Amino acid sequence: MSPLGKYYVGAAIVSVLALFVLPLPSILAWLITLVALGAPVAAYFMLDESQRARLRRARRRGIGS
Image (cartoon, rainbow, N blue to C red; front, top):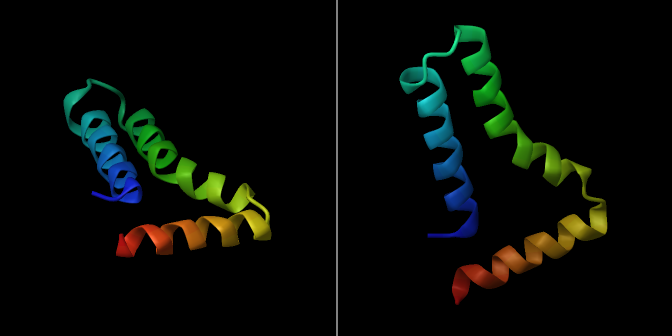
């Protein structure tokens, strides 16, 4: 599994736990879900353009090997 796929699986697990298992109020559960899904996206957009390009090259290189 790719590293990016691991992040998606982790975010999905946190979302399921927050929404269905933990006895949290509904709004708090949705906030936890949004943070779990939005944190990697926000971190990516905080990179400058050269860092994003380097990350894309590293991902592409990892796909074929």
